Image (cartoon, rainbow, N blue to C red; front, side):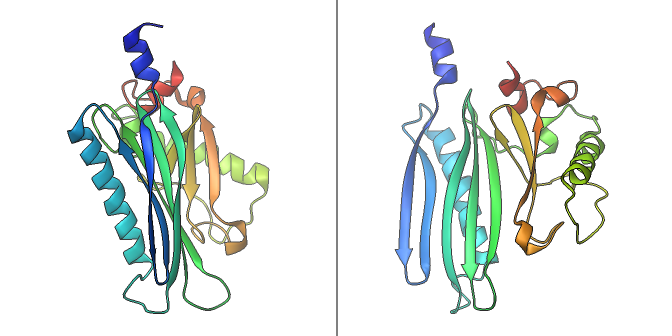
Length: 206
């Protein structure tokens, strides 16, 4: 394997940071030892901002009864794509706590954090295409919905894993709490005619 190809497939190094305080047990990732300090700073700043936003959304620390456990999962770390999920569970009393999830998908070349629309060619009707696939899957899996499913949001939550785009819904967004997060993995090959080739999904295809 030549050196350029080897570099292209090299995963980025990730370090876990831990914050332990009263009512807070937090693990979050940072990329380290990158060739570009600027890209490394951009990615890490985006991650920290998202972690802080989740804490704020869950009522920590301004609600003194809120107890938070937060961690992360790496979904893809190859081919100059880093996709990860930040998961935050907060308990403030009652029958059960609330978990929220935020996923980030980066180019490790530029530090860019991609939105769902940026994974596809401009003008492609990715919303209708993905919505139809998810509607079929909801029927196939016989998921009882709280609300009728008509369409994903243009900025629907997603991450990239293996050779799939995984679209997901927050707790209560579609179904009762007991169903948790609803995940819908879609093969990149089922979308290849509308994928932006220079984006994260394009990199997964070849």
